[in-house]
Length: 169
Image (cartoon, rainbow, N blue to C red; front, side, top):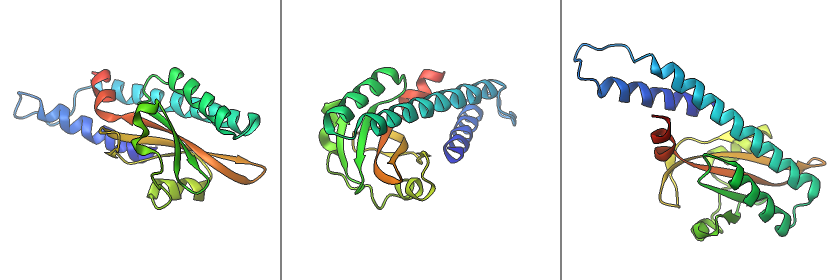
């Protein structure tokens, strides 16, 4: 998560400084501090919700009906989620909400760096930004689901980075 926040801060600083009409402006505007607070708050809130819903799958079962229900509820409660995916224990995306983004079904994430990091740390991971299969510039927050030490899969929230930043300004 620190990597993405650093990236976001750098993008905002460069953007703020390059949009200025003042050729001698060296420091970013003070509004960046406020934006950093909002971004931290949004990401903390999203990671908390993601953990709650992942725990719901652990408690109520990892059957497809329950997972689909959890994904739909998470999407409804996520103000910044573009879509929600379920990643199988093999690293394959097996479900997506909303279903209109079915282009991601059967995509193999097992070799993706953020997926490997999640498995290694057994904790949520925030990815670098990337060109998503859904056609947006995105970043993902992925949360692993373990039950009795066994890895069941993961929930992932895709954030449309461009839309998110437009909403902050």
